[in-house]
Structure formats: C-alpha cells, structure tokens
Length: 108
Image 1: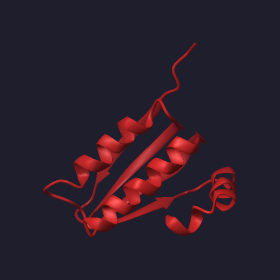
Image 2 (image 1 turned 90 degrees about the vertical axis):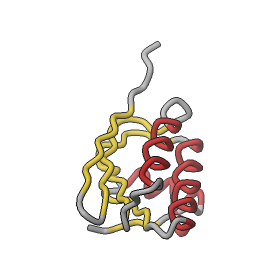
Image 3 (image 1 turned 180 degrees about the vertical axis):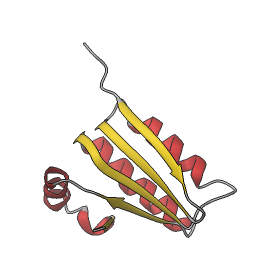
C-alpha cells in the first residue's frame, strides 16, 4: 500500500509564515505538520501562521484534532493561526464536527 504523502512548503514573510499543504492530513502525516508548526512557535515566532489548505485532498479526525490543538498552542503563544483556501469538503467537515468555530478561517 502506498503511503499517503503530505507536502509541506514553508514560506516566510517578515511577520507571517505561510505553510502550503498538499495531500492528506491524517494519522500518518499529522506528526510532520505538528513538528513544523511547533518549530515556528519557538524562539523567533511570527505574528501569524497561515495554513494554506488549497492542496489538501483529505483530512481525517486525527487531522482535525491536530489543527485544533495547533490553533490553541499558537493562541497560547500569542500567534494567530489561520486556515486559508479551505475547500468545500473540508468546510463541510468542520461544520459537521462543530470545529469551524474553534478554528480561524481566513477568507482571503
């Protein structure tokens, strides 16, 4: 069986970091995503971290849980964590699970 891939591209601007995600956010890939975000929440943290979800094809409950955990962690560090380019399917999942209000979703 092929291992689903999540490609993570980090683009740094002076006060924000955009993380472009493509592929599947699931039990196999959440650790990688957490590691990237946790590193950004280290010493030299940006004011804002944007997760660009445009290329995300799948997100399971583990993925959703991780997004919420990372969002809370960021908040705790006084960093804004926002999701951008959230597709219809993901928005529906967030609505169904009631997590839409727990995450900051940027419309731009």
